[in-house]
Image 1 (cartoon, helix red, strand yellow):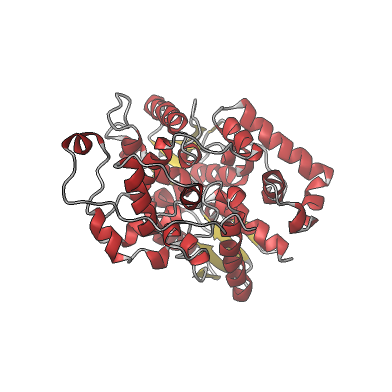
Image 2 (cartoon, rainbow, N blue to C red):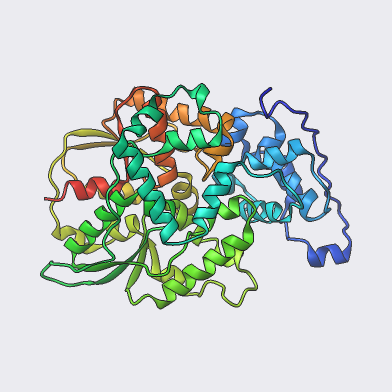
Length: 438
C-alpha cells in the first residue's frame, strides 16, 4: 500500500472568536488564520497538493494542523503528520497568500513541538549526523564519493533499476554526481588582476562543500579575475536548513550561532553563498533565534549576499570578456531563489554576458521540483512525479544544459535525466559563466 493511502480525517478549523487569555500569551501568533481557511489562493501553487489532492496535503489544510498543535496543543494522527512531513517547504504559498501567513515559521514551530516521531530512516540519521559536524566528516563524504566514482561503482549504481533503490540509501546513491568531483577550492586565493577591489569569503555549506566543489572553483576564478582576494569562510557550519526541516531546531540554532560568529569574525568585505537554499535559510535566522542573545546582527544582511546578486550588480563585470557559446540553456529557478531570495532575474542578466547563448526558463519552473532538502529521499512518492515533470520539460526543450542555483535541486534533476537516458548536464549558472571566461 502506498504510504499515503491512509485515512486522513478532515480537521475542523478549531478557530474561535474568543480564546483563553493565557493561551494568547503563550501560543505562537497566527495572523488572520480564519481567512486562510477560506481563501485557497495558495492551493494551485502547492506541489504536494498537485500530487496528492487531499486538503491536508495543501497549505490551507496544513495551517489548520498548525493551529491544532500550536494553539490547541492537540495530538495529530499518523496520517496528519505524514501530510506535514511531505511538505517540501517551497514557500510558494507565502508568495501567494493575501494575508501574508508566515508559513515557514509556523511549520518549523509545529515540527519542533512534535512530542514523538517515528525513527528517521538510517540514511537521514547518517546525513543529519554528518551535517551537524564540520570539516573532517564533510571532507570524508567528498572522499568517499570520489572513490565511488574512480572505482566505476558510480556507473553501476546509476544503472540499477528503480525497484532496487526503494530504501533511502539506494536513493541517495543514485543522487551522487556522475561527473568526477574536483578537489575542494583553496582556502585562500590572491587576485592577479591589476586592480584589487577587496576580499571575499565564500560560505561553502555542508553538502556543497563535498559535492559542489566545481561551483566553488568557478566562483574563485570569477572573483579573482574581477580583482578580489578570495577565502573560504573560517569556522563555518551547515546553514541549519535541513535540521530545521526535520524538527531539529536546537541543531539548527547551534549552526546559526556558529555561522553568525564566523561571519562576524571574517575580515572580508562580503561573504557570498552559492547555494540558494542556504541563502534562503540565512533569512530565517532572526526568526529562528528570536529572543536569543546571539541573534543575527542587523548588519548581517548587508555583509552576506548571493554570488549571483553580487556578480550581476557588480560594475567590475564589464571588465571581463566571455567567449561565445552556441547552445540552448534552460534555467531551473529553485523555490529558495524564486520565493525567498527572489533574485531569479539576476541569473538571466548574468547569462546575457555570454554571446550566442539561447536562454529560456525551464517550462513549469514556478512549481517545486520535489527535492525539498531531503524530501527526495524521504518522500519519493511526492518527489519523483514532480521531478519527472521537470525532466519532461527539459527533454521537450532539447536543451544542451540545465542551470540551477541550488545543489539538492541539481542532484535531483540530474538523477532524473540519467534515469531517462539523457546526457543533458545540470550545473550552477556561475560554472557556465566561469567556463566561458575569455
